[in-house]
Amino acid sequence: MIMHEHHSTAEAAASDAGHQGQGAYMALAANMLVSLVIMYFVMFAMIDTLGDFFHNLNMGYMALMMAAPMGPLMLVTMPSMYPNRRLNLALHLFFLLAFLLAFVAIRYQWGIGDAQFVRSMIPHHSGAILMCREGDLADAELRNLCDAIIAAQREEIEQMRTILDRL
Image (tube, rainbow, N blue to C red; front, side):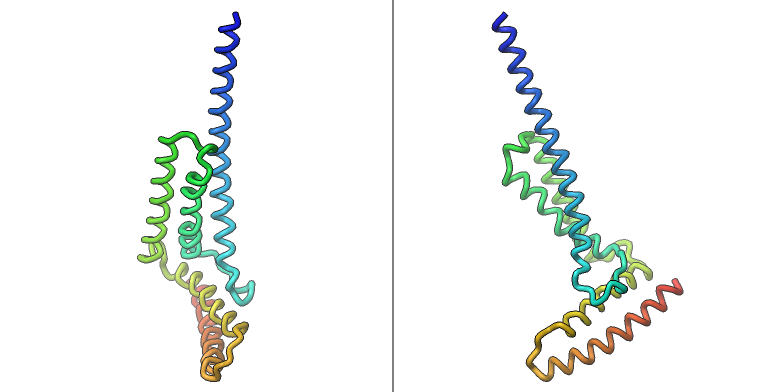
């Protein structure tokens, strides 16, 4: 009878560990998804005005490239939470593949047609305006260059808005 209770307790402990492991992997998935969304929106911290915010694939690719390395880092730094070696290997490969695909996608501009190009370029130009406007520049040539950059970028943003409306 005592042997049976011990066996049941050991099975229960193993089952609890398995459920905790599954919970940790589900938490990892949730953490990665939330981190990806946060990183996507953080990419827009550099825009000059909220009116220059446009969802675009390039920011998504960059956010994925930033989030993907977090998965292996979490698996390696918290091994007791993630005991399934086979699943860990699969996740390492998944995160590596996600990073590489996002890298290739941004380098070769996968899915970036006319509208996505403009939706990517407006925040990019807006960032140049912000940096020039807020930069504490002492060099006169740089200040003059920034004045020209601000004027040119604002004009190009307006042109791109017109094009986007037409597309």
